[in-house]
Image (cartoon, rainbow, N blue to C red; front, top):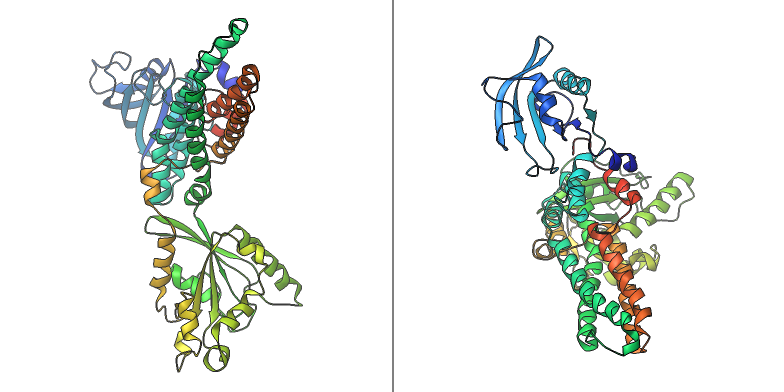
Length: 475
């Protein structure tokens, strides 16, 4: 989307299909702009002949026929929204027709023939932002809400769209701006040695701001994965039942299962929602030294997926002799973990899975050690105790954080928060070292700039173009 053209052509009227294309019960075509009513009146014959869209009350629906020339195309319902009480803040119309691809296409062609233009991706929401219906952070949340695939990602997007995050950013920015005004005023009276801004109050504000900005920035590590789905890598040596375990968790035959070691040569991924949280499971190639070039490439990809994962399900075959006759289990587990580079495991939740309990004829001699390691005993083949894994994954996420607090899930917001933190650190250092107010004012303006980038109070056409181009057409 060429935003520079959009900003100069904001006075034109746009239209687009707002529902997914294809066969459906109904389809909705959206129209927005100053000519919405006059154009739609040319192609809409209301049942009530006294009705005109341009004089009808806002938020009313009218039954009638969509006509092209003298031909009736379809019986439709037309919804009227008068500015500024519409999604875009402009005069808007929504045409509900039968969900035929032919009907939808003919309606769009008729609207374009009468002077309307096809909307670009995200253009309706962009107009809503430009018309002050919501800030940039809230506009981004619209796309996240549409793309949400679990209760958690839905709650994150909904909270952001309702302003839970951006309202706090605006309040912090306002407080900082108030103090900046006083410091700037001091610079105007620099020759008179006056102090309008109370330094102690300002330091307390900076400390509070730094704490809040840090907490928001730190929330990105979990907010981002909650939005996209928490990556879970299923890891272990060949033939320990990793693919069988994946199939058991997903309750479908997603991965090929074989007794031959090294069957899984590449990573296999699938997603499941557990208690409103989306988990992305990754079945990886078995960890072992291999002379097979293809298998070795699969193991390299395993390391990549482990690096990306937040949770590792480390699977081992509890029926092997090392657990039933030799023991202890701890020594065996250390041997298994030796196949993984230590740096890959840092900061990750590791859940030990003792698989193939159906092959046990007696309790493993290392049973006590495994219990102390909080190991989960399962039979993936018989789908026994799979619920223990599901419960353990659910406990990993503190879902109350999503509903009760603002949480950052956007990389753009995270980057702006990190830069704000750096500016606040420079301001505090400046005060501690008694640096002149004019130099401190520069860092304050930088902090204000970065906070303003989040809500769109300060932005560029390039940023807006990048954000709205990712929206679907019709939104």
